[in-house]
Image (cartoon, rainbow, N blue to C red; front, side, top):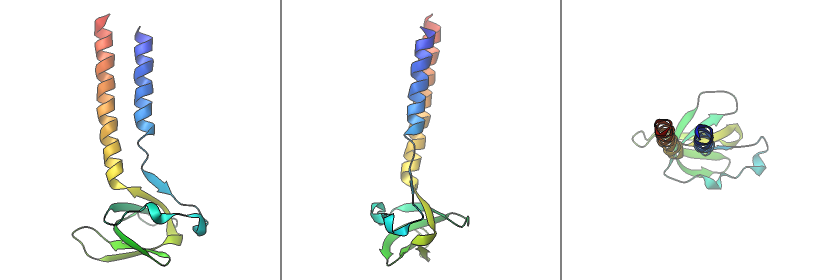
Length: 120
């Protein structure tokens, strides 16, 4: 009985961890990249190809070969990032939701395992 509950709880935990991906990666070939999934008015964290620090951007639109936005909701400094330099874009809101779901799921799994060990 203990092994089956432990197996089920570990599978459930791994399911939460796997589902927490919230990153869109882009390839070297710029023509194959689709930036249409970026939504105006959302905060994104942009990782650069050259290893420079990640940039937070409140995305506005795409102008030619550049991503255009501002540095934040309160900071109106315009940020222009060339598409050729983008390696990955993370949606901060999805990452927070996935992290919260993982924590809640882990607490649920711990409760199931604890109740199963006390039942014996």
